[in-house]
Length: 309
Image (cartoon, rainbow, N blue to C red; front, side, top):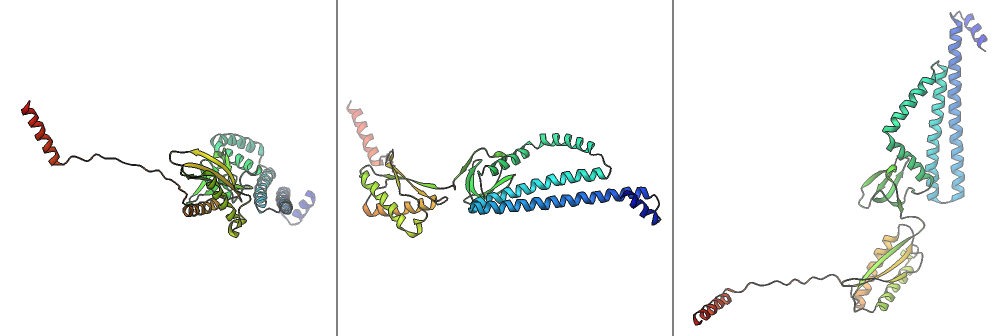
């Protein structure tokens, strides 16, 4: 092939055909390397898409599909980086640039950058572990690094949260040590109620169960509530009230809605039946200053006593 190119160049009357032949061979090999790199990326992307579709058919769960898609993006990114690095080194080699000094320089620079960017490396490593272990998914409500909210985006670098007030928080994955996920499987709406000491506790607990039964019959809440009310009983004897605790098993993220509605209904029922829900009361006693007439009379009495003595 090389000799054929030289003969063709000589027939075209080009001077230094050997140098031009070497250059054309180098460009040809570079083209082949780039073509193979493109082909590998194409095949890798195709395999990742097939894997994603296969997992989607196996899971039939939208939340799991989100996790699989996130992992697929990570794998595509890793495949692209690896292919570009290998193809770049091969291209440099074909251009006659020794990659040994480049690798040595990259190694030294990598060590220096590693010391300066330890937190960044930690973020990516923790992010990959969180994704693989399925600790957080998009759409979950979580508490991480002292912040809580809805997960709007999850990347290898950070987790984007939006709290109840609409504030957006970007939490680096390296800062995540404990994940409290409030939207997995099921949740409990925990209710604490305070009633007066004079009330019959058994009647109060019966009323609390009655409200839970009514809510399960309500079409608006029937699909949200998964089980009957669990009555824990007397939780605490407080200063001015007896604290009763119960909980209701509900769908994920429905614990707050169910609790609000339960409290609204229990307040209405307690008002109808005259069940006291006491609140802290403070009585303030003040000393009124004596009237001027009283002060004058006391002074005159004291003066007369002194004269008599």
